[in-house]
Length: 72
Image (cartoon, rainbow, N blue to C red; front, side):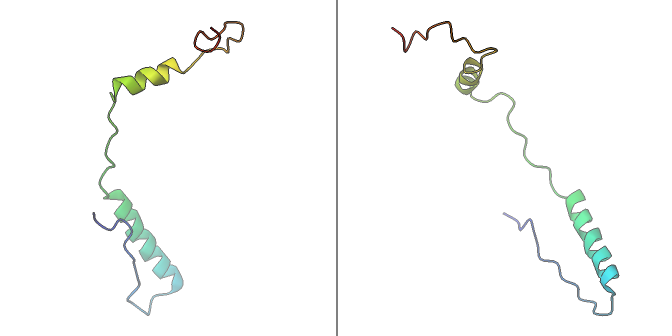
C-alpha cells in the first residue's frame, strides 16, 4: 500500500516562510487533486443484512401492541 501522507520538507533555505507555506500548500492541493478515488461501496450488499435493517426500523413506537416474541 502506498504511503498516503508523505513527509514534505523544504530544501530551499532562502525561501521566506510565506513562500514556503505557499509551496507546501500547492503540493498538498496537487496531491489531493491527483489522488485515486476511494473504492465505492457495493450498492446491493448482503440481502439478509438489508432485511434486518429494514425490519428493525419502525415509523412510530407501538407500545400498545404486545411483542409476540416476549409477551406470549
